[in-house]
Image 1 (cartoon, rainbow, N blue to C red):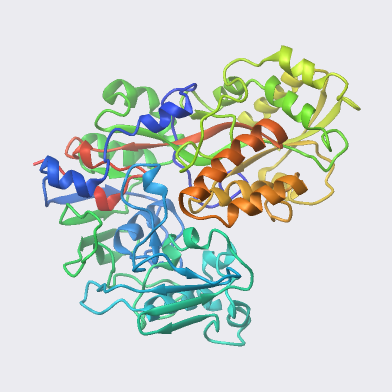
Image 2 (image 1 turned 45 degrees about the vertical axis):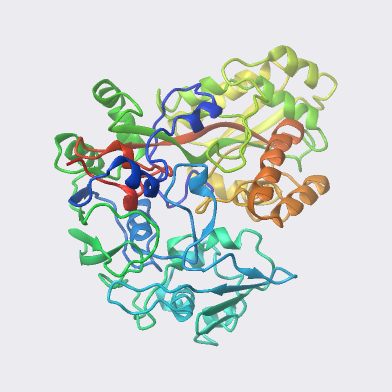
Length: 549
C-alpha cells in the first residue's frame, strides 16, 4: 500500500538509528519455532491472555483490514498458504496450510490446483474446497464492499468481473470438487501463493451469510475461534478443540477489550498489568519512547522493536530529462543524501536506516552497504555527478506537513553540494499522491512510502520498479523488466536468492529510488508474558504467545 501507508496503520519505533540491517535479523532472540520450544523448554499451557485496542474494524474476513483485526483473524483462520509461526526470515517463507502440499501450477501459470487436507471448523464441520470458494465469492459480491476488491486482490480471477458487475453470482474461475480447489487466473500472478496468506482468503463455512455490516462470532478454522463478539466492546477467543494442525496454541483463551479511550490508554493498560498486550500507533510509542526504554530496555523481555515493511524514500523520475538514462546522477544523489538527518526529523526512534529496497526481514535479503547510512560521501557523489548534471535543476514534490517539509529542506541542502538546485513544491498528502500517480506531472523527485499487505519480494520490487506496474511512477527499464520477470516466475529458495541479488543490483546500479528508512514496529507485553513465546512478524503472533506460571 503506497502513499504513506494507506489505510493500514503502521505502529513503529526504533532500536537505534544506525543499527545495521544484518544485526536487525540477529536481534530476533525470542520465539524461535514455538512448536519446538514447547517440547524443550516446558512452556506453560493455559491461562487467559488480555488484549487492549481502541481501533478495530471487523472480525469478518471479507471486511477486516486493520493490523489489530488481522492479528485476530490470523489466530482463528486457516489459509490455503501461510507463514509459519517462526521468527523472520523463516516466518515469512510461504508454506501450505489448508493445502496438503504446494499447489499444482499449470505451464502457463494461470491455473492453480489445491488439494485440501482434513481440517475441521471449531463446530466440528469439515473445511472443504467449497469453504475457500465461498470465501472468494463473498469478497467479490458487490454488496460486501470488501477492501480486497478495492486493492485489486481478486480481480485477476476468471469470472471476477462478472460477479462484480452483477452478471454472475459466483466466479467461474473458482471450482470446488470434493477436496480439490481449482483457481484460474486471467493473467499470471507471480506472487499469487503469497497473496493467499491474507485473512481475506480465510476458510469460511459455506453458509456464512452475505452481510455488508460483517458477521460476528462464528466457527473458526485455526487454533482458536471467535467465541464472542460485541462490536466496540469485547472479543473472546477460545481454543478450537477440533484443531489438528501444527500451529502453537498455548493459552486457553483471549479477551480483547475494545474500549480503550486512546492509544496512550492501551500502553497504560499494558504497563499497569491490566492488559498483556495491545495495538497502538507509531506516534503513541514515540511519545512514550524514553519512558519505555528506561523502564524495560529494548528487546529484553517486555518491550520489543522490529523493522516493519514500511519503506520511506524518494522516487527519482527517470521519465524526466534530469534523470532519464542518467544512472550515474541517480547514484550520485544516493551518495549525497544524509539518511541519518532525514530519519532524525521523524523522531529519535522512528525507523531503521536503509539504502536498499527489500525489507531486512524479507527472506533472501542480502545486507550490502551500498551507500553511506550515517554521513554522505560527497567526494564520490561529486565524481559521479560531474558531466551529468544537465540543467542542474530539480522539482521536488513533498507533503505540506512538518517533518516532510523539513526533510525536503535537508534533501535540497544535500543536493546543492553536488550542483543540483532543488525547487520544493508542497501539497496536502492526498493531493501529493494523486499528483505523483498522474503521468506527466513535472516532478523530478518525490517523497513516497510503501508497505505491502503480504510478504513477497515481488510485492516490493516488481510493484515499485517494473514497467507497467500501477505503483511504478518513475522507472521503466527493459533490462530490469526482464530481470524482474525472471525472478517472479521462480519459487522457493531460488526465488528469494534471485530477488535478494536483484535488490542489490537495482539499488547499486540503477538507483531509481533513494531509500532512507524502514519504520519499526514496537510491541509491549506485560510481565505475565513469557518472552520465549514472543514471535514478532513484525507484530505479535497471537497463536504463539504463552503466559508464565
